[in-house]
Amino acid sequence: DVLSGPTILTKGFTYAKDAEDISEYLGKIVLQTLAKCASRHITDWSTIKSMIRDDLSGYLYKRIKRSPMILPILLEANGM
Image (cartoon, rainbow, N blue to C red; front, side, top):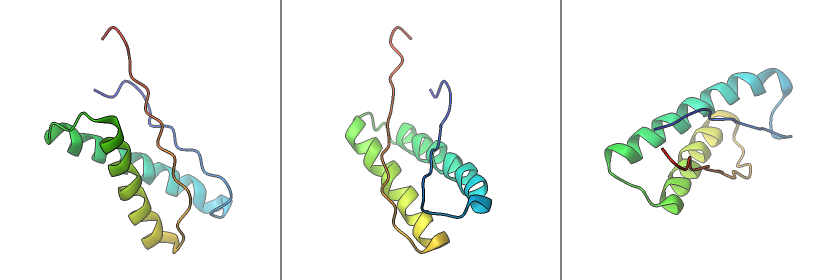
């Protein structure tokens, strides 16, 4: 289960006026990807990060015709 987030930080690859809209949609993509991983019982962190990176890259290339660096960082909640 996702406890909070996702937090999307962008830097230098889009105009400021588009950054908020793009960031909001990127967050939705991350949540969709995490749901897809959960439904497929994927629990390997590197696989999850790779799927997030691939889904975000595909969207960004379609939207802005650029391929920025994407660094997914996942934090695990201990004791849950």
